[in-house]
Image (cartoon, rainbow, N blue to C red; front, side):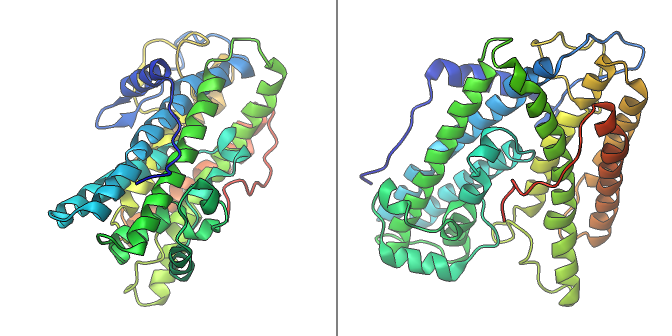
Length: 369
């Protein structure tokens, strides 16, 4: 396909972030932050130290991984549109690329800070619920490039729209829908590249630069982490479960990613972000030195000498982690248990963790509609 605008991530930077991300994604793909036993010495972290670790060892690698996956979406969709033979195989390959891109996005956006909030990336990439009628109208306009896609409303773009085009109304060779799907994929790629660059810039910023902004950035992360707990509990799990129950349990469509069968994987990816930034079940023999590793919220608290709330946080995260193992839309009792654990963790954060960090919890609509 012609007229696709792409952005190339610096190869050295891409290699560095993917290397860091690969080192972090262990034990079956679960990123492990360092949870430090109460009797282990922990260095003092400033808000700037905390945020540099978060940017360098979580957000930059995840943003690069998302850009890598999204970078293959336009060509995978184009292969479906151009296939004269093996169309079914090409469609399946495009679906697998979409799944990988969606999971990379769900990990990156599990807790939304910095560029994710500033760019309102969720509205651009993951607008829900899917609006089939608006997608159909957008197909009729036949956009051919990035400029034309800017006139298309966000409900007709992003990963949910592409999911609908790949599963609910499967695209086929030489059709307007297929050509539109290529443009949707290219639009996702452009935003993914922009996020990778933005988080890469934050991760490589020298220590001490814009130090005055790190306190507000830390406060934003704690607020967004708390909000993400509620979003996972209510918007992702409980609200769709209740909607399905009201219809006799026959309709699972309200769950995000239901068309592709990736709902449970989405929940797991979002929880991975929350767990990694909060506390990890793996015990560490030593805490990372400032700038040398990811210190989750629990370790940050210990560095401030706040072991009691850190202990409670570790216990609550561990309880939620157990409740969220293998939870799926088909397991309504499991969803209820997971929701209860997430609600308890949120309550603890508001009542004890945020005050210990001198952070005020406020309402945020940064995660979009």
